[in-house]
Image 1 (cartoon, helix red, strand yellow):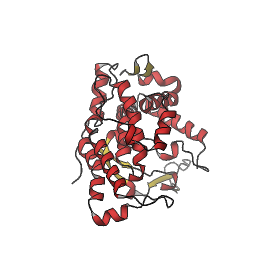
Image 2 (cartoon, rainbow, N blue to C red):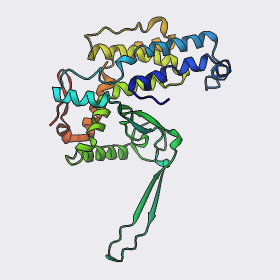
Image 3 (cartoon, rainbow, N blue to C red):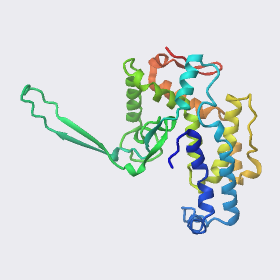
Image 4 (cartoon, rainbow, N blue to C red):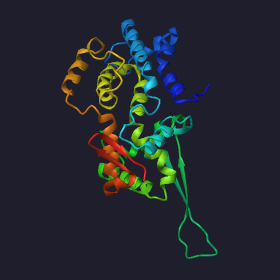
Length: 293
């Protein structure tokens, strides 16, 4: 049965490990770690994987939409943010939207009424729908992968071109004629960053178990910055981390604990340039501010 709420959606993701590792046939197939250089999972490894996803599952009530919304927002802005992030409406998310997925067909137009009109008819097709699924609005509020900088050589678009196109998209969506249609996406993109990050952990391959435990250390710092009124409910770090991850965590202790959220804020502001204030979005002394105009 398809999920009908954010909680159902995230819970289904969190139960994947139990479904896989309680099925003897699936367990044997799942012991492979994808990387040939890594040995197959042991029973102890599987136990740790299931425990990590159980721990993630206990955090679902805090990631169904709006838990990290800053208290500095106006009441109208908070109402809009909650309405979008906690909406029971689902959209369609295409998780592999790369340039190679698009097919453009140009058909010459025969305009008898205006033969001077040279504009052709253009049919744009997106393929790869096996990668599409229903997801909450905050999950669907993303840029396509080909506009997101990645450390991959020979990208179809240079990073400079990607930045230009991101800026163009934000500029167009910031137009007051577009705001009635784009406001949900804007709110979901900016304030849905923690939910998307958490969704990414729940939906990860079990081989990333150690990285997720390291991520929970950073989530705790992030939580304590934005929601100091509620104690973080999990013990993190220590015995839950392998020695390699302990080293990585130690070397990143000075990082901004709010980066999960502020990176989206800053990216949006940079992309919008001088029009950032038109979004009602700025980085105030007490955290992000989003005021409806």
